[in-house]
Image 1 (tube, rainbow, N blue to C red):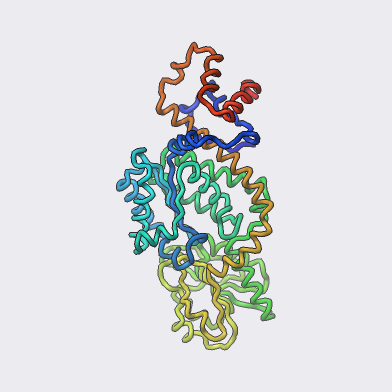
Image 2: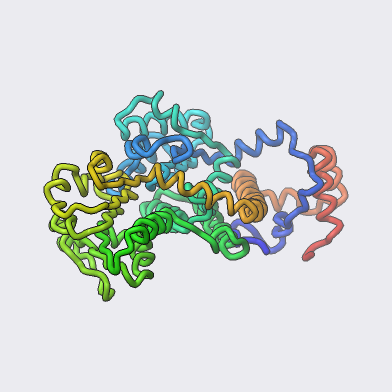
Length: 431
């Protein structure tokens, strides 16, 4: 089974589809350095990534770019770098920029300029960004996108949220006019590959997300208290992360949820029987009753400060605070208060390690699917680039004997590549 390849009808005719027949790479040796360099130059996509693998939560917070600020940065990249195409992905665990340079003469300079723009956005030096950033070019950039979209680069391997986050980031750029053939092809193929991994492996079937890990911590905390009914104050229940957490919480009959709402945004209130909707402005009034306080918002301000919390919590009891927001918005000093425990994203990362160990076999299977789909989309891009630069390629080879073409390929290709061509020819058309 192969993932769908997203090409326009003008790119390939029925007669030329044989050029994209899959080949068996199992016996092939790596391509020569010259051939690999040429391929990287054609696949001129570039990516800069700052993630949980390179940066702590406080550092990722500085690099986090809100949806409101995203379009302005993309416009700046589009005009300032003359980048023909660009997509920004910014979540609680990663900020990444994917760029397809409109002018190949700019290759080699784009990543440096992207680092400068991220440094300006974060209010830090370029050297600070370079210490945290990973850089990808050509096939490696496409491969990284596939891995991210499939959940293979996530803090919690195989988690589901990243697929929707990549889709949303791509659609925002597409609708704003910042994508073209190359990024459309790559992002759509990455999304299709992720769905295939989800269907054909156990990587996501046993998925544990950040929200689910947070819910498990809540369940453990409440189980130790042995109360008949417990209250959880959930701020951000209408967001992606908060919505998953709310669903997990409601799976337990002995949990009542106090869900904050912001009525001025016109957000719909939850109508579940064990959910009490309270105004976000009244959140401090709920602290005394709450056994667990969770913040899963995407706002720039503190949802809970230590001073206000101390004033509001009159009843002496153990409380669990969970901050799974980006940027973090529960005052760190809350964790130092008596009878209060604070779990933040960096703590969730440690909780994810055991889950990730259990998924190693599924991860190996997912990599095989990824390599197959990655190779396929790279061939589509290479062929598209060839037809763009050689509009009369069909006419050029009309009337030339097949034998002459085979000799040409024999003389120009390395042995492994020529062996793959001969293997395809042995199969014949339509096989």
